[in-house]
Length: 128
Image 1 (cartoon, rainbow, N blue to C red):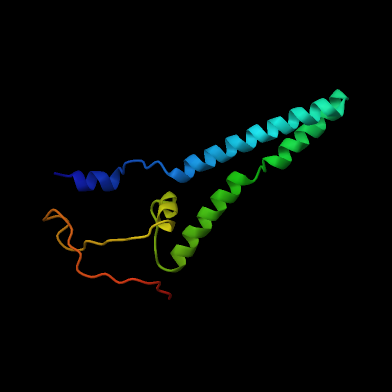
Image 2 (image 1 turned 45 degrees about the vertical axis):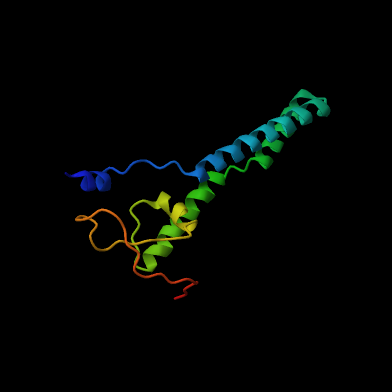
C-alpha cells in the first residue's frame, strides 16, 4: 500500500540517453580542442603567442554557451507548454516526450485492476 503515492512523490531517477550523448559529444570536442591546442602551441614557436592562440582555439571549438543554450531551450519548451495549458512538473522529461512514438492512456481501473486494455487507436498527425 502506498506504492503509487511513493512513486509520485519520489520518482525513480531516469538516465536519459540524451545526457550520455551530450557527454560523449563534449568529451569528443574537448579531445579535439586539446589536440588543436597542442598543434597550435607547437607550430607557433613563441611560448606566449602559442599559449594565447592555443587558448583561443579551445574557446572557438568548445563554445562556452552550450549549457546556457540547452537550459534556455528547455525553459522555452516549458513556457510553450504552459501557454497551451500544460503544466510540467519534471522539465527534463520533455526530452523523452519529444521522442515518443506511441502513447497509451489507462484512465479506468488503474488502481483497481492489473493490465491495460486498448479500446481505441487512431493513426496520423493532429494539429491544433
